[in-house]
Length: 133
Image (cartoon, rainbow, N blue to C red; front, side):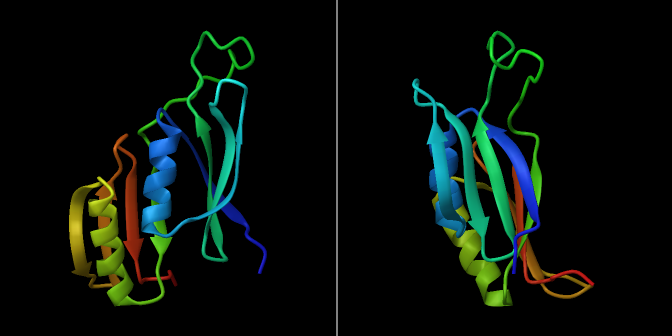
């Protein structure tokens, strides 16, 4: 299956984001850096169905990107897991990697089980076994 949807985001500390994404189950599919070491593009895959693309935040004074100011810490993403027990394990790995719990693993009335955490920059990550209707 070809991946069709990627969440796009920026991080102040892309290396910390890489560690967090790896801890919760994303797979590194390429990290490209500029001469200063800033991440200009990274792709981390979520299973076979999608993923996130991201880079380091660029500031307003960046001469190469002055018309495209980017910020961090305002994203939210839902990642589908295959089974309820994966929700609990992913929550534990996320918290161990430094995430702040928002909602502990909970069975949902509409089906499945889900949890939510915030990463170090404030982005919200939800993981659940409900794949949508």
